[in-house]
Length: 143
Image (cartoon, rainbow, N blue to C red; front, side):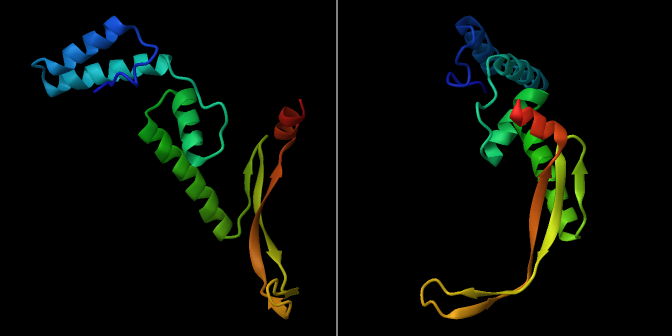
């Protein structure tokens, strides 16, 4: 059901009409159709997040720009992240043309120092994910 807070910016008469339609004696199919129409109307009054700083912001941005439901956007974003993570675990590079390349680098074992005690320690070899921006991404950032 549409709430008043979700309907901010929506025509008040339309809000009342949607509320009335959902509360009357309707079939589930009719209520679902009303819900779909209401979500489309609400979408027209929403804006994408000003900044994309988190997973939730990215999902909101995808929801708005692709005009899809937030659960579908969430599944899409999580699938992309999982796909990139799985490929990197296998040691594969992921190239997204015009955006960049995700890849894994090997960090060799090296001597280090315990910051609390100052005693020398041996840091184990590890793998680290890296990203190299593509030309179009660099150009977009640099104007």
